[in-house]
Image 1 (cartoon, one colour):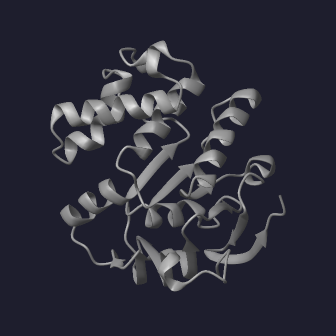
Image 2 (cartoon, helix red, strand yellow; image 1 turned 180 degrees about the vertical axis):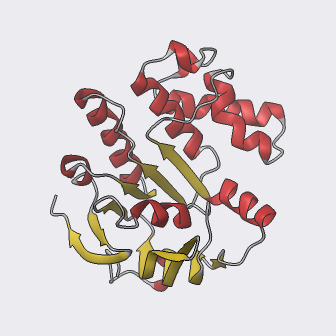
Image 3 (cartoon, rainbow, N blue to C red; image 1 turned 30 degrees about the vertical axis):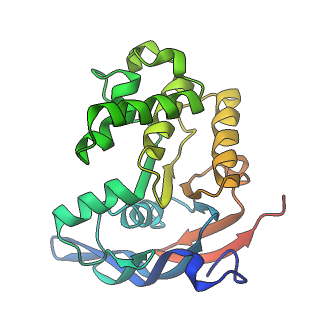
Length: 238
């Protein structure tokens, strides 16, 4: 299932083939994903929706290389990440996946600049180059005058913009957003979603979990999940 079947195969960024995830709880098996197959192409913007227990969180964890399938294959670009060891998976995730979380997940002891450049530090970038990249992205999200501030000194919307800058710092293949407006008021939510839309218009591939229809409508495709499967796909007319 894909949002744009006219694109060439070279445009496929994410490919899931019969992906299953089974959790063993005592003597019981829980089938969180029950055979999911899909393609996401460069520049797509997907909203992943569904009731509690439908598999959308498990799907996001698989897509973000935070968990691995029990069965099936998962490719990002030409790389099959289904069977990578933990160390290789961590490095691949750092380089190729940007995360935006509902709770921001900023480190409170670090400044705006230090939070943004943290992934680059893990990848071994030299300090000057990492500083320059962090400043560039802080200015892009209109926080160039907050580089020395800590998260506690920022509003919720400003913290989410720091998280967005951090998600972009390694120029990832995909951005995963997990309820990115869940802790924000209506006006701030609109600002954050406008920024995500602008990133998508500039070519970024975004997959977003949300339960809010008005937020989902910023995406170009809706994936509705039910009982660990893709129930239906809808295209959004904008």
